[in-house]
Amino acid sequence: MSKYAIVVHGGAVTMKPGQLTPEEEAHQREGLSQAVQAGWQVLHEGGTALDAVEAAVTSLENNEHFNAGRGSSLTQQGEVEMDASIMDGSNLRAGAVSSVKYVKNPIQLARAVLEQGSPVYLTSEGAIEFALKQGLDLEAPDYFKTEKTRKQWVELVQQAQGEPQQQDTVGAVALDQHGNLAVATSTGGIEGQLKGRVGDSPAIGGGSYASNDACAASCTGDGEVILRGALAHEVYALVKYKGLPIAEACREAIALHDEELQGDKGIIGVDTEGNIALEFNSNVMRRAYRIGEEEPVVAIWRDE
Image (cartoon, rainbow, N blue to C red):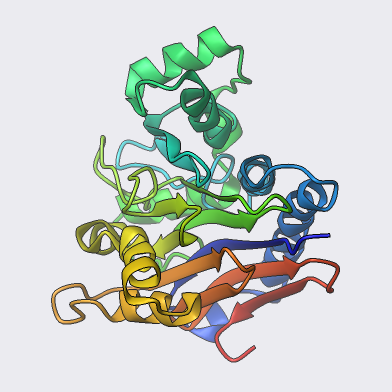
């Protein structure tokens, strides 16, 4: 049996230890465990890396304790606008969507865009119309809004100094038994973001990149910083052209132009040999992985 592996993340952020309640931490650990299991099951049964990352990210989108799908952050207007991308390392096909409302699982919409072949990227009303044609599950706006995101939005509107406990992105990278790589990334954006704001998550090469000749990488953190650094593609380039091990490539990408690109940055990766990376410059990155038949690992804090 060929080596296979999956890595998932639920966002990198700098926060004070007291900001994450024990209850919320337990929910997030359980959610990471469920997501990595969903993706691993696909790989274990001989399925594709593409199906595995979609399954893992769908699980996180359905979990209100992560900022993607249900539980997405709210814009200044108190609305949800979601972004997602997915890429197949075996043929460089990709699908991406941005500023999406109503679609229960934006990653499944991105996958549908990938399967159509062209275009690669759909946004706003066009993406929603495409979701309708594909028969994807839709939900009313209230489905995506949780008690926590409503409270954070109210604090934001009142210009209170409420510090967010939940933000960022979810993502997954995988290597399947056939030697193929894939990546999926999805986000609800940042709370109080400008209407129409798009971060790194749907940008191929920004927040997501996968190619069978090197690696797959998914980014999380400050989207504008990651986008300006094209960090997912930077990881790919460092592995392919500099020959760096995947973990070292992720560390070097995080340090890229550090003066100009300051902010929270986290990257998960996997290479063609099943070596994995979970690198970040914040004190928190919600993360999990499972390699072959080994036991799964789930972690949140830097010192784990």
